[in-house]
Structures are given as structure tokens and as C-alpha cells.
Image (cartoon, rainbow, N blue to C red):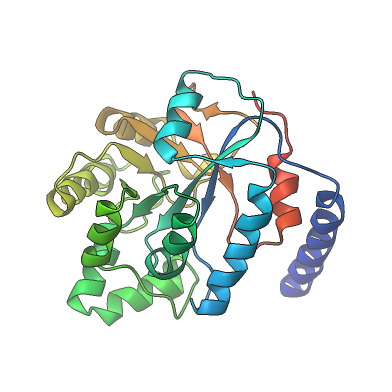
Length: 267
């Protein structure tokens, strides 16, 4: 019964967004779009081409900017006359390397990829048991694979940025200080060891405000310069100004859905 309800709900939601989004356009603010992958279960050329079409249409109405420029404008409360869009992607999927970065390269902009180091380590070690548990049980995306550290370093040399996403995609709405420090602080240490540069960026997994709490946010803010959610896009900041809010999207969404969500007023 629940599955039938969810199917009907999803269908009605998609119809609403596709219809209303046809008449919407991005509002003149700085937006950070956060996605994950080109498809939930695979990453082939057709998926990359679908993302290419989404970008082509979006670019008619927005300027694409590097993520560090978007952060500067947001932190300085700069006003813009034309919408600015920067991109981030969570979890470190292989299609970030094979499909997403090549499409963004065409526009001369970078993105920030938030990765789970233990997931990336599993790719290098061939730890299929960890990968299966991560994709099937944690992220509900069976059949997907992570980037390797070598692929990440290639993107890093091209100007892409990398942030922390906990070691294991851990939900930080927790009061266990030892585990929070392990997942949040040790993640930064591993990132810096692997990539050789300071890790200043952290996005908490699952992304909604209820997936964190004041304790975990305080730990994150003490160890990272920037902390991100994937929620409450109508406001630039949450948790008393400590967290920067991003707008969820996916490269496989209809462009009308993206237009609808970017059309809101931001404060």
C-alpha cells in the first residue's frame, strides 16, 4: 500500500513540477546546485548527453561560475542582476569523473565533489563487500561505483575542488561525540593526507537540516571553513548562519524541475 501511495505521490509531484516549471525561470541570486550522479544505477554516454542538454538549456538563463566564486559572493552578500549557478556533487561517484566533469569542462567552470574516503579506498582496494553495502544499503544506488584516488587527483589538477562528506556517509544527527569526531574530523585528516592540500569544505550526508544537530554542526565548524546542507534553499544560511544551504537537483531531472526550484526568492 505504501509503495502504491509513493508511486502516485511521485507521479503527481512530477506532473506539477513539469507543468509549473515550464513557466518559471531562475531568480537573480547566487545558487549552488547539488547533485549526485547522472543516473541512479549506471553511467553511460547517454546519461552524460542528458546532462549536457540540461546544462545547455540552463545556461541560456544563468551564468555558470566556479564554486569558490559563488561562495565569495554568498559570504559577501553580493547582489547579482543575472542568476549565477555553481555546482557541487556528493558521494564521489565514478560518473563525476567520466560524465559530469567532462560536461562542465565545456563551460570552463569547476565543481566541488564531496567524497567519503572509505568509499574511495574501497575502490582502490577492490573491496566489493564495502562497495555493495554502501551502494545497496546506505545510498540505495546498486550498481554504482566510486571514483578512485587517481581519478580524483586528475580532477584536482584540472581545478576541481574536493570536500569531506564523513568517512562512511554517516548521519551526523547523533550525540556520540567520539563517533562524530571520528567521522567528521578524521575524514578531514584522511582527505589532506591523500590530496596534499588543506580540506576546508564539509557537507553532511543526507543533507536535510534534520540530518544534523547543533553538536555535530559545532564540531564541523571547528574543523572546516565552510559547512553545507542540501536543504532550505530559500535561505542562504541555516543553523544560525553557520551552514550554507544548497539546492538539490540531479543531472537526470527535467529542466522544468530545475527551473521551478531555482525560481524562488532567497533571503
